Image (cartoon, rainbow, N blue to C red; front, side, top):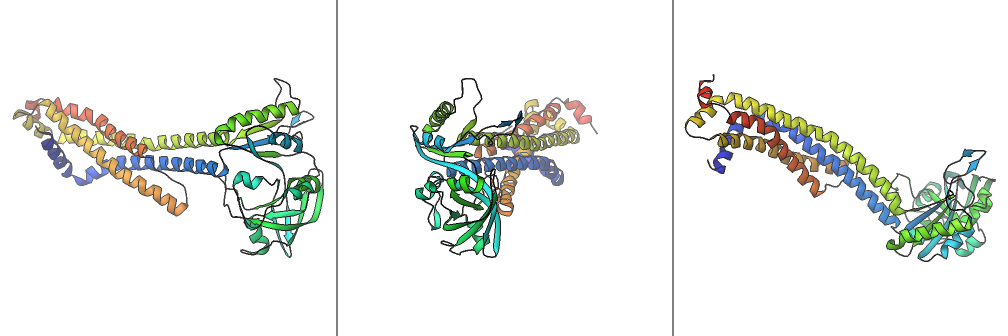
Amino acid sequence: MSTLMIFRIAFKALGRNKMRTALTMLGMIIGVSAVITMVALGAGAQRSIDAQIQSAGTNMIMVSAGDFRQFGVRQGQGNASTLVPEDAQAIAQVDGVRYVAAASNARGQIVAGNQNWNSQIQGTDVDYPLIRSWQTSLGAFFTAQDVATAAKVAVLGSTVRDQLFGPGFDPVGEIIRVSSGGAGANVQNQPFTVVGVMESKGQSGTGQDQDDVVYVPYTTVMKKLRGTTSLQQITVSATSAAETTQVANAIAEVLRGRHKIQPGDQDDFMVRTMDEIASVRRETTQTMTALLAGIAGVSLLVGGIGIMNIMLVSVTERTREIGLRMAIGAKSRDVLLQFLVEALVLSAFGGSIGIALGFGLSRGLTLWMAWPTAVPLNSVAVAFGFAAATGVFFGFYPARKAAALDPIEALRFE
């Protein structure tokens, strides 16, 4: 029997009961579309992470203050007071370092006229916008002279500008007042002159508003807002992305020497590259994607069992037909192939519709809920192949049962 004839018989058999055929394919449609959608969500999240890392700079290195113990109680990372401005100066001398920006942050109430807003006050250095490739939309970033003299100057994020002065307003030259309770100081109504406004950057990967911040010299935060002599962080940019790991290791060695840390002792600082930060987030995303895809894959299993059930029913209903075909010369392999093709058609059509539905759902999530999605082509191939394999696997038993029927007994079947 020709292959074309086998397919014609399969389509004719499936078309006799269209409702049953459609319901049989439904499990496969739901399973494939769910797998495609879940994988698209995971791939979209991973691409979003990669894009954020690229925008931040793959050659960026974060040096943070380490753990601090007080009376045997560990205060956690970022609380040690051993990271100082001189460390930033030493890091700037390391081969492969391009930019360095020391950081000391606080949080405070910002007042302008009769408006006020609570925001992060990020003390940093003049190299910070160069590290992040950020620009000002109005005015300019503060200068090295401002850092050296701990000047009371501020560059506003666009969110802070909008809240204090209104959207589109040019606040350069205006006076804002800052109240902040630091580690060793409690300052009230410190006057700062606005020298610039940063371009809008939107939300970070963690959902934080990157425009809800006020940038001031780190020396000003240390001396006039927090009353400390230590830094919380140093942001470094390597000359190239290929040298990032090597530069990070060199920075760690310099800091160990400066802080007199003996071999085997725990560091009182942390050095992290963007690749390390990204790898943690990617692993989390991949784990969640695999979990969701696994759950969705259960639908494929259910769909395959549904195909097997319907094919067993079909074998029972068509016993006399099978006996008649075998009596006039059809071989067992022809009957086996016929029922396998029917199962394959069910799963392949269901898988195709499921793939189209998966693309639609992914696109809908992006349009309606602003969730990043991306459908990898290999996931489409895997889903379709798995759907076809499921049909063959669950269709083999009914097909084999049909092929094993005795023609005489089949003709007697009522």
